[in-house]
Amino acid sequence: MPSLFNLIHSLLSFASKLNIFSSKPSFRSFIFYFIGILLKPRISHILSISKIILYPYQRLQYLISDSSWHHQSLSSNRISLVKEIIKSKTSPKVILIIDDTSWRRWNKFSSNCSNIGKVERCQVVVRADIVVFVDGVPVRFPISVKPYFTKDKADELGDEVGEFKSKIELAKECVEEAMKFFDIDYVVFDSWYTTKDFIRFIEEKGLKWVGQFKSNRIVKIEGRRMPLSGSVTVWGFGQKSSSSLSCFQAQIGEVKIVLVDEGGGRISYIVSRGSVDEEEMVKLKRLRWQTEKLNEELKNMLGMDEYRVRKNEGIMRHCEIVMCVYTFLQYIRIEMGLISRTPYQILEMIWERIRLVKIPDIILPLLETTKSLKF
Image (cartoon, rainbow, N blue to C red):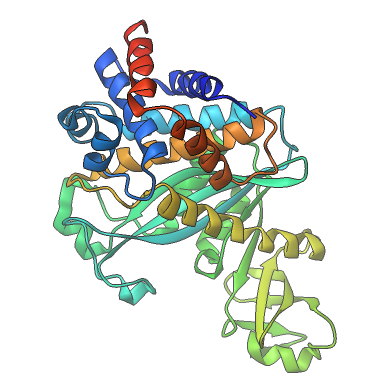
């Protein structure tokens, strides 16, 4: 089991590789914000972090809201570090998962999102995560988070959020960013992204994909057009847990569809090209829960949507630092041979070490260390 000293040393080494800051005060504030999220998860906004780590609120506020660094620069360093972490420790297969989720809102960016299946007054974001395997255990890393604004909201906010982009356009950006760092084996997504435009984009990049259809999608099977829900009877489905066939879909063309009985009368319609094995399609579909779990950990464990700042860039800075903290937890799992533990269990282990000492005993050595850094 790693000691508190080893954990602090690992944290400083990890944070130094992320450093994009041009001054010691900014990097020092970054480190304290970072450790504040570890010490005060779930409610990790500026005021709570300032209180728990005994660091001036104004300096943290300046770091998140007013300083000149851009979250994309930190994101590039973080993803490069993820690549370094997994390079020699994982299997070569890299699965990219595209999904979207909603955050609760604290400011003017609130949108009525009920028309796209989300709760009222929320912020929808398009996310890209990767899943790799360490000793057969799936390990997930966040890659990109991109806020989605409706056309009316984007027009209202203007330059602060830029021009309107659809969720499909944001998903394309996520794929392109991931491809700069990783050799992607498969792109996995749900029915929202299983569109002609997105699939053509994926295939032009030379990538394999696994998507999903809704039950009302019209397909042509043996010359007969029917919704997928109607194909269940024609298919004779129900005598085994999964079945597959090749069919034609007007927008996407020839595809292979695998029907999976999820129990309780629910059927999943997994879709890909014929070159992807049926068993592989089912396995990749099952991996989609990894991104749901990751989203839960980022929000409920580390307070990703607890930002309480007004500027869009400030929101993205907070989210980027939270993703850095999550990457650090996965780094500890892999580098210290604790892969059997979950990120939450790693966080609990850190808490257990910290409870043995007083907070100033942690903070003061960190402060002295950051003072000695060269810029």
